[in-house]
Image (cartoon, rainbow, N blue to C red; front, side, top):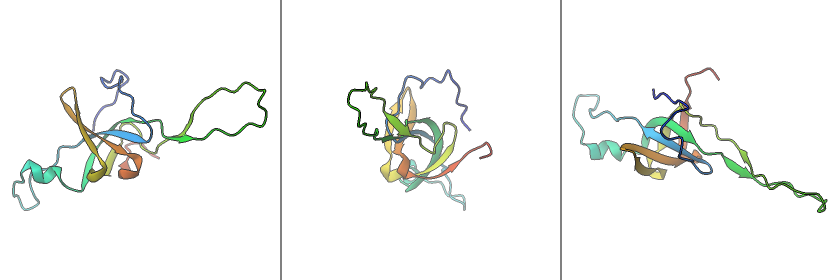
Length: 124
């Protein structure tokens, strides 16, 4: 498991909206019978597993309409938070993932809707 700390080198990155930044696990390069697979086969599988590194703020919620226009209104955007949390292990659909490399590490950005399953180490 990846250790997420406040002094994380990715603290300058802000994930937008309902997106999740995931560091993919190293896929097994062997089949169950012991055959070696080339990297192109393991990278193109439809379902992948990885560690949730950063999470976006969530889905924006529209602000309620006020019937009192003389009141000063503060335009604060509110969000409905995502289920994924930093440190979770996620199983996600590869076809919706966007691959990127940051400071020599491979990451993927996926929308919350592409995550099929989350495994959390703490009790729910």
